[in-house]
Image 1 (cartoon, rainbow, N blue to C red):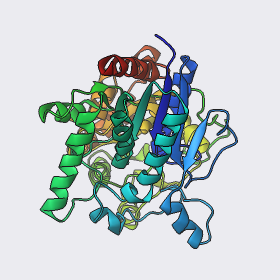
Image 2 (tube, one colour):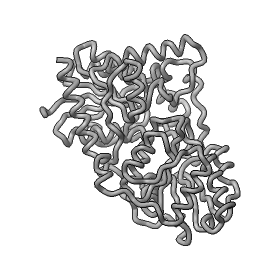
Image 3 (cartoon, one colour):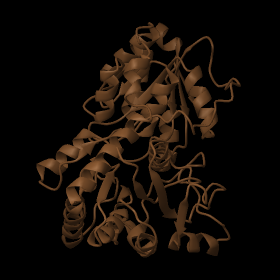
Image 4 (cartoon, rainbow, N blue to C red):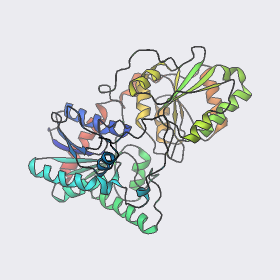
Amino acid sequence: MSPRSILLVAYFYPPCRDTGALRPESMARWLRRLGHEVTVLTTSAYGSTESDRAEPVVRTADAQLWRARLRGSQTVDALYDADTYGGRPHPLSRLIVPEPLALAWAPFARSRALRLARQRDFDCVITSSPPESAHAVGMALRRRGLPWVADVRDGWTFEPLRPRFPSAAQRRLDERLERRWLGGADAVVCVSEPAAADLRRRGIADPALIANGWDPEPAPTPSGAPAALLDPERVSLVYTGRFGGYGRDPAPLVEGLARLARDAPASAAALELVIAGPLTTAEAELLARDVSRARIVRAGSLPRERALDLQREADALLLLAQPTRSQLLNIKLFEYLAAGRPILALAGDTEAGRVVAEIGGETVRADDPAAIAAALARLVAGELRAPSADAVAGYTYPAPAERMAEVVEAAISRRA
C-alpha cells in the first residue's frame, strides 16, 4: 500500500482527557507507524501539547474556549473529571442542528482545512464524529476534489446521544444533513454493526466496520501500587467510568445485587461491587442502597493510570449496556480486554455484548435483575474465565489502523 498524506479532522484529541479522544489519537499514531503522513486538525479548546509541531497537530479557534476564558479558565475542562456530574445537555443542543459545535467550532475548522489543503498535497481526509458537524469539513474538501472518509463513532440519528429536537423542522433538517453528508462521502466507517446496518437499511451508505480497539502504547502505565480499595476477602467486581447517558442504567444491576443478597446471602457476603467514576446525584443515591450482605464501594473518579491499576487487580470487570442502545461499543471494553480479567457484560442484545460473547465472556441483558443475580452467583462461584490473548488480538492496534488504511485506499480509488 502506497504511503498517503492524510488530514484527520477530530474535535476530541489530546490533551483532551475525554474517551472520545482515544480513537483519533490511536488512529493517527498507528497510521503514521504504517508509513502514512497524518496531519491532525482539532480544536484549541483543550490546550496543546509539546508534540503538536512534530506530529503535526493544527489547532483552530473555538467559541467554547472564548467562553471559558470569560470565566477565568485557560482551557475547557474534560466532561467527567469531577466525582459528580449533571448529565444535562446544553440548552443550545435543542436549538442548533446538528449540535452546538456547528457554530462554535466547525466554521473555524472548515476555513483552516481549506487553507491546509491549498498548502499541502493531501491524498485523503478523514472526519471523525461526534460532533457531527466535523463532517461539514469533509464535505467542503470533497467539493474541491479530495477523497473523503467519514468515521462515525456514534450513530447520528440512530440511537442518538443528543437530545431530541423539539420541532419537526429541526428533525427533518438533521436527517437531511445526515443523508447529504454521510451519503456524500467516498467511504463511511462505523464502530459498531447496528449503526452500520441502519445506514445501509436507509440507503445512506454502505459502511465498513472498524471497531474501537486497545492501544498498547500511549496508555498510561499502571503504577503497580495497590489500589487499596478492594477487599481481599471478597470477589471484587469493578466498574470504571461513568454510568450516565442513554444506554447505561445501573438500577437493574443494584436490584440484581439485592436479589442475590436476599436469595443467596452466602454468595452475597463474598461479593463487592466497586464503582470508580463520577456519579449523578440520583446514581449516588441508588448505589447507597442497602444490599447487605453484599457490598457496594463508591471509589470516585480516578486518574486513568489508577483506573488501569484497579482493572488489573479486580477479580472481574463489569460492562453495562442497555438493549435500547444496541450500538454501544466504547473504549472501556477494550481497556477491559487488555486487563486480562474475566468480564461480566450486562449487555445482552448490544454490540458490546456480542463482542464479549465472541471472546468467551459472560453476557446477560442489562434490564433483567433475575438474570443479573444469577450471573453474579456464577461470578462468586468462580465460573467466569478471562478472554484469551488470541481472541483479543483483532481488537488491538495496529489492526484497526490497518483496516482504516484499506478504507482510505478504497476511497482514493473510488474517487479516481
